[in-house]
Length: 507
Image 1 (cartoon, helix red, strand yellow):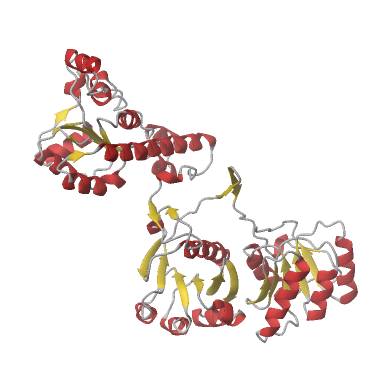
Image 2: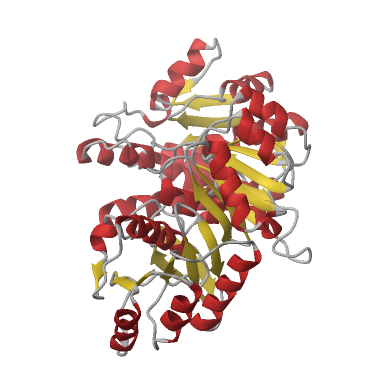
């Protein structure tokens, strides 16, 4: 059922991108109604517009809190054009039909994020706008609702193509999106009063992009979120589902080293196969690559420092899917862009949500992110021998990596460099043996190295194996009923052990 738009009510906060829509509507002879600043905006374009006050008989009152809340407005939106009783009442009360409503709500979330005071925040709770959205969406059989400025370009293309008309399927689709806008907005307000962070539950209202496929080619996938707010893509193909999962793991890990010197991490299947800190970007990358150059093939690389030409020339030798950095030297980009499919991302400063979501069974699990990172100050020495300053630094390094590695995990490190890790094993002993075997296979001497465990040792077998491999210091949460057995072995064999009291499982 195609309907030509003959009248439109426009009341928006942000005017960016609105002008082409207004001009198109005017060119098609659409009667325009508007309020306040939007009315002024349209008049300054030289286009005739009728003030809503002329419909309602009331001025904008209470500091603009009440403008559109009137039967003449909501009747024009809600009356059913094919209903004889509604038609008669519309004629009786001189209520004009409103075929299109364009609303951009007060920026509530932006105002909260700005740190504004409560009075300013409360004034950004939109009442009339949200009511207009719900009314127009309810009567989608007759009215087109444009509920956010993010739709302006899409709506302009639709109306241009169809000569300022819409089909029922068009109006239904925009109604669905409008209820998503309403739901997201109200949830954000609710979250503010509850004192919790930005809403992610209503993710369908976020910007979205269809991915080539999901974890495997037979699975469909969509990303909901604003990647452009977090990254500038400088080069390469589109990101895939698995790319995005690895990028998320990269960001979480490298943020542990925000205050460190130049650091590079190489991620494969969300686990670090290499990470190192050094005096220069080039050396940090080379040290990270040395951890496991086999697994690094086809991985995702991230750094906390600017990529210069020297490091770019080394990076260019590796086949990698993605490189992420806060900045690049122009000469470095020239080198790195030589591979056409390699994705180059420049990360922007952006605060990330503090909660995590996971669908499971017939519901959703929600938890706080693991933001605990123990430094030497939080490590309690439980053995007769205390770790040296160098060992403490290595233990801090190892624990940061351990926290971001799949459980059960053991991480071996030395001098700002990952030596090896055992990832996702069903026993801690298997994880340790895997780590030792990998380290030796790449030529690392474990003498004087340190070990981090994501959870406690239920038996002394791990410290026994570690001692035999040359490991001299261990960090673990503690809390096992048999902690004493591991501590006694360390005391008898000159191994230093510290506990943190904090477990870092990552399932």
